[in-house]
Length: 206
Image 1 (cartoon, rainbow, N blue to C red):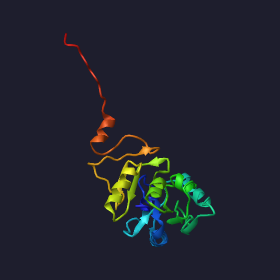
Image 2: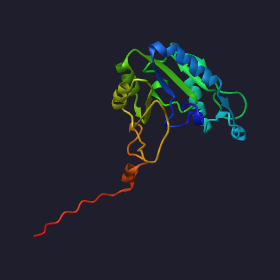
Image 3: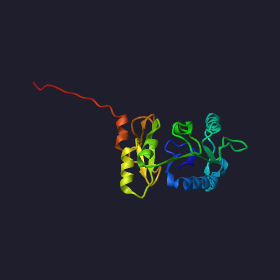
Image 4: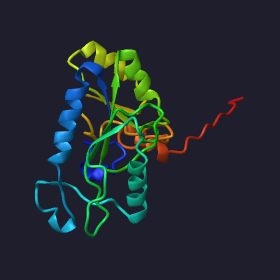
């Protein structure tokens, strides 16, 4: 869900917020996944093992490279973090840990094959960190505690919240965000509202 389409997906799970007790293990597992992710071009996409392709254009390629070049000193590039050699706009699958809430890579959408990782101490801090950005399209909560999943889902300021999964979309459910992620919905009956003109007519029968 993070590296699909080279991270160029508005619902990509590229910002990961993890409980402190599980943080080191999660960073390790994410780094292993990134290292094992196969990168390829359009000529190799028939290979079922290829997941990450190039970025869409040079402008986006330079933007992602620029953000990686500005990783703050307190953060750590666990794996990746650079453009791949050769032709094409390829960025290696990347994991950046130890970021702070006001860091650029947290506050701005990267839109590339980059996962950021932060740690939280308790549920309240996790919710505050999740909501503490200007975007609000998609999120997910991962837990064995269903009551916690319900509390977080209610508290998350995102138009879409998945529980123990991420990115599946169905035509029956609305899709759209809050804050700087736009307004209105596509999919479901709510999607028709954007194409509907409502007229109010009132008449006196006297």
